[in-house]
Amino acid sequence: MPAQQIPKTLNTLPENPSRRQLLLGSAGAMAAVSLLGFTPLARADAPSSLPDYAAWKEQNALIIHSANTMETKRGAIGSGVITPSDRLFIRNNLPQPSESYVADRDAWEVTFEGVNNPRTLTLGELKEMGVVSTASVLQCSGNGRAFFPHGAGGSQWSVGAAGCVMWTGVPVKTVIEALGGMKSGVKYVTSTGGEMLPDGLDPKKVMIERSVPTRALEGAMLAWSMNDEDLPLTHGGPLRMVVPGFYGVNNVKYVKKVALTENQTDAKIQATSYRIREVGKKGDPDQPSMWEMNVKSWVTAPLETAKSGRVMIYGVAFGGAKSVKQVEVSVDGGNSWKMARFLGPDLGPYAWRPFVMAADLSAGEFRIVSRATDVDGEIQPKGRIDNERGYGHNGWDDHGVTVQVG
Ligand SMILES: Nc1nc2c(c(=O)[nH]1)N[C@H]1C(S)=C(S)[C@@H](COP(=O)(O)O)O[C@H]1N2
Ligand SMILES: [Mo]
Image (cartoon, rainbow, N blue to C red):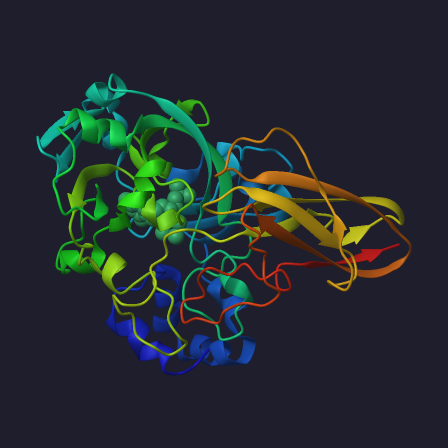
């Protein structure tokens, strides 16, 4: 980890509390940072069991990075079209709010601004305005961060800060129409999370408020249900902004305000965080924001060993903001490729597609990689674009697995 990252992490509220605790820890821990690299230490202070609020999750399916960050194990992703809720990753920038948030779900209030008839609506009222169900991949911008060689700060997500969820809610555009349409000059949809903010800190630095361009209205919804159950508090219940095709951070949980705005919010999480920037550079509003996701896939089985003979290779693939068209698999580290077959139904452009490919493998070591292509012909690259925070990694090389066949 580059030394210059340390003072920066200490001076600002960190996006990953575990790293901060790590850096504030003993001198011995600091020395170990440089000796061992980032992966073992990011986990050194991780709780060994699920925090109380997440006790309903399937512990065996998760890697616990910190009390606020848990990812699905690669081997627990499975080959289903929908990720079971109790295996889905969790990412909280602030501690999860109390159960009181979901005590009376239909009474939850959301304020709408930037429309011709601004007003506050209850969740009960929203439920009567319209309803759609959309399957979409929820993926943290930093999924794949652990593969960056510069030790990008933040949770050391491997592949499991992602899942495919069936959301049910009202399209945001339906609500806008019901409120008289948007004001002229609007360019962004700005959503505010309902967490209570910690005392003594500048609210702009900690609040969860994200702006997405109005093109996101094509799929954006206010969701009260996930996988056919009331939206769990852990995943933003009673109500969450869902922006299909966009990175996780834009899917604001416990949403209490939706504003149609001319400018992006100046909250830190938008203005300078979640932006693609060169290693060592500071965040700046001119850098690309983590909005639409890119085409991506990875293998989910086998992971370490396999029996020689016919080996079924499984994985998941998605196009991000577009449909995925095809996925190829290589068992020789990308020298030769064969087309995989999608498994199960196509749940639409924002969903992922499990895939399978049969390979006849004799004893030996195999580097298994997968490479997806979206409907516009965009293909997963081999490498990664190094960037300070380790965002947007879809390079197939790093995402492969090495399997001993015997
Ligand atoms: N209100 C609020 N919304 C939020 C966050 C948060 O901390 N608070 N985290 C964001 C980030 S960075 C991600 S990746 C996703 C994670 O969603 P999940 O915890 O339901 O998996 O929620 C996003 N929305
Ligand atoms: Mo995230």
